[in-house]
Amino acid sequence: MKNAFAIVTLSALLSACAVAPQKQAESAAAPQPAESGPAEPAVAEAPAPEVLPNNELTGDMLYRITKAELEFKQGQWQGPYITMMALAQQTRDPRLARRAAEMALTAKQGGEALSAIRLWRQLAPDSDEATQYFLGFAVVADSLDEAEAVFEQRLKNAKPEARPLAMFQMQQYLLRAKDKEAAFKLEERVLMPYDGMLEAHLILAQGAFALNDLARAREEATKALAIKPDSELAILTTAQVSGDIESAMKLLTGFLEKYPNAREVRAAYARILVDNKQFDEARKQFLTLLKDQPDNIATLYALGVMGMQANDMAEAEKYFSRFVAALEQHPNDERDPSKALMILSQIAEQRGDLDAAYNWLEKVEGNDEKVYLAARMKMAVLTARKGNVDQARQQLAELKPADPADQAQVFQTDAQLLRDAGDHRAAYTVLENAVKRYPDNPDLLYDFALVAEKLGQVELMEKALRQVMIAAPDNQHAYNALGYSLAERNERLPEALSLIDKAMQMAPGDPFIMDSMGWVQFRMGNLNEAEGFLRRAYALRSDPEIAVHLGEVLFAKGDVEGAQKMWKEAHAKDPKNDALKSTLARLNQSL
Image 1 (cartoon, rainbow, N blue to C red):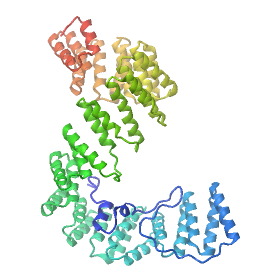
Image 2 (cartoon, one colour):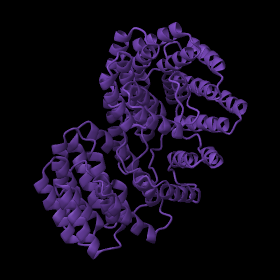
Image 3 (cartoon, rainbow, N blue to C red):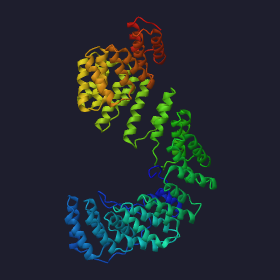
Image 4 (tube, rainbow, N blue to C red):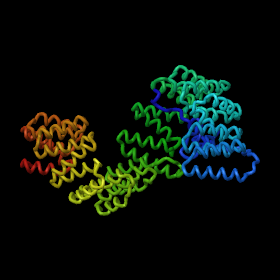
């Protein structure tokens, strides 16, 4: 149940408090040691005017500070850190203590950083920024006693309307504590004076839940719900700690009957339904959410996914299109539409609208380099499919990824375009050059082997496939390809059987490996075994070449009618299939 659904999130809690903007909520986390300088302060409140000592900047001080900064730039940290700490103690200037903390953080010296932050806070007791840093490091260092007093004071000093936010900030800090039980005990003590607050019980419920104390978690969640029976956060927490999905769903449906406009609860309920594969009911819940907010991005995306799940491509396309349009109306939204754009392109391609597929891909931006590259390569493939192979290859040539594996993919795509166009010699040249550049890339070697075989260079093919087996010993495709090639040429059949058997052990459910096994059994004269493997393969994937093989096995067994049936099915799927043509010609058969 713990991992079944994450109901209560910090952002949800903070938005429910209605005391801070979203930007504040997202930054309300304990700072961590950074590679360069300290983390940003956890609360984006306007800082109080800093009270600084009235010190004269003497020549000696300027010299020591300048020398320390130069040494720090040169990669030293300890001497500059000591200088800044000494000057901070001497001058009582908190800025120097902060600089010492920054130096220790950059050098990843947590203990020294905490000492400097302690001094910084001592010199600037009213600095909320110093307090934020101190709390973050004190909790990580398990100095919970020091942190507890600060948490107590912060809650005491907070205005009533800001106190819930301060509580949740404390919770976020304590998530970093190594001793989770000690952190929970601290929460109990600090929150004791606020027993009448909903938020105090929510935090204790979640803390107990994290410690697997379900009885205590339920007790605290029940108290929270009693304080505010219409609280979405309270019922979500109660459902989360209920112990099982059935109980959680009963709680949420009961709440929705009383409070049908509870969007967060309905959304959580819909997610649980999806997790439990109750897709029709989940879709109803998402559609209900969409009625009130027709441009809600999260709901539109969820309905698009549900359309994919139901294999309803029209439905998926409708909602993913609306999702992309809604994002375009909110340019400040940081969500990336790339995945939806890729899906929309795939849907358009499946229905034969290559222009629409291309246009969707054009909208993919470079936020994610891998996705952007995949979109650009797919655009080249679509260009080739529209008959412009030269233009497609030029599009690929313009791609210059820094990652060698990505560049290898570009070469593979280029070769595939040429193979699809029937120019196997040019594809061979592309892959030959690519393999010279990346000799240990198993994917390139595999593709090179297939093209070499197509050109009749079987020795070169076998050498490349054996290189794949060395570079990627768990690559079942290499074993299968070599085994099938031997079976197809009716050579070294025991070795072919051994290779295909090894591939099948790696991927027992792969229909193409089953096809190879059926074919090698046929070559060895084991017709019944061959038919069994080929029928299982065809049941998993009705591929034309599997149908051709199964047809030939049936023909060899005297079942001409059954063979004709399989060959006609293969012809219906791919009238230009080379394997079908050669088989019919060799057996003197026609459809």
